[in-house]
Image 1 (cartoon, one colour):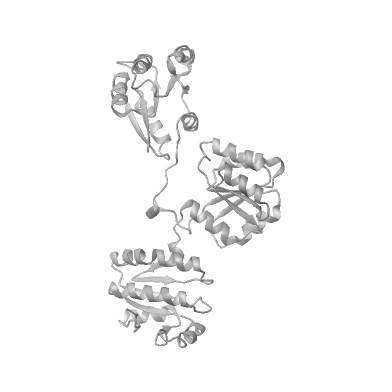
Image 2 (cartoon, one colour):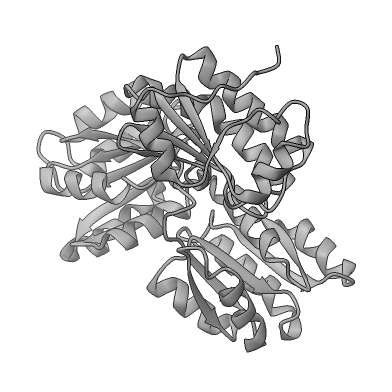
Length: 385
């Protein structure tokens, strides 16, 4: 459920600053220009937090606070007072009425977020699956590891991604690095001295900026004690050493809800293209099958009625690949799309050895396939019922 934050201030500028500060978070900002309006909004909406200015016309902050705390339905709402430098002592005097904290104007947005985050759970906005970031977008990964070879191994193993990797040796350096730039994902070695990885985890979770950042612990596969401890305290997941790069990539993709469809589906001018990469693992086939109908429907909705299945990277076929290809062809036929196949000599040769694929017609290049479709020639492929 979204948090409601009520800002009561006669300054429109301050209200704009407050709204801007909380924009990255999953919350609704309510506004009032004086205490009378503030009490009315509070009574109607029951906010989770009130930011209350002291000096206002009609009804000032002190009077509103007094009435607020006298109302059984509203008295439990936490209040942060906003005051000019000269009003600091006044805030301290009225704190006994019931103030959780105060902020001196002018204030920085970070201060406001930090203080509010101590009182309510400020959760960053996250896009739904339809708007998830793409696997092709750059993300920032912070690696806390005192063994440089491990950092280098990860950087080298995932260099095919657009991801940026930062490596630091100690938890102190990690905190400084997060302060300068909050990473999208954190990988931390659980074998750091004196269990400092777990201390770091608690500090990061206590900080509003990194509270929801995915944090993965890296540990030797045989160290089951550390793995269990990481799961108990709440790490996002565990990556075991020796490290499999596909393991890191898969877990990061899942944690950030990255859209992987662009690995397999693209549109080039009036052509919709589905590509299968090598190696074509079970995971790849599953992802392609998951996205297939949605992406084809999107292409048709954009007016595209020509499709190309490009499998020239594959070194060979198996029944799972063939099953997926039939599924794609059936989808194209259902939507009256013309389609063509692009493959290599090995694929063409193997297709002749299967009863269901021996009559498939392949083009050796994308240009040939596009030219054929442009001429109105579609693949004559029998699709099983």
